[in-house]
Length: 121
Image (cartoon, rainbow, N blue to C red; front, top):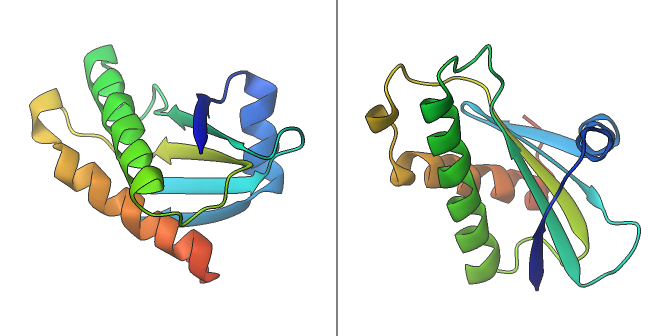
């Protein structure tokens, strides 16, 4: 499975509007099948500025989400190749050291399990 970044405002909006959405704590996951190639999985992450005004906090959360989704998708084939996934973090701490990889990875695993099982939250 090949992982690529999802880029562009329209791509994010299309996945968020038309894709299947689930929540897992402060994380919102949306996924939909990919139009083009079937072996590439596109992943987009975001943290709104109103949630985390400091860029340091936003960048740390985005980096932790990318590491978590990569690990979760590669260790188990929960999602098939050929999907577009968007992860949005909806609440953030004041300081970047207050969030750890284990925290983010827990929510990503839980959200992916909800996406693949068919349960809505």
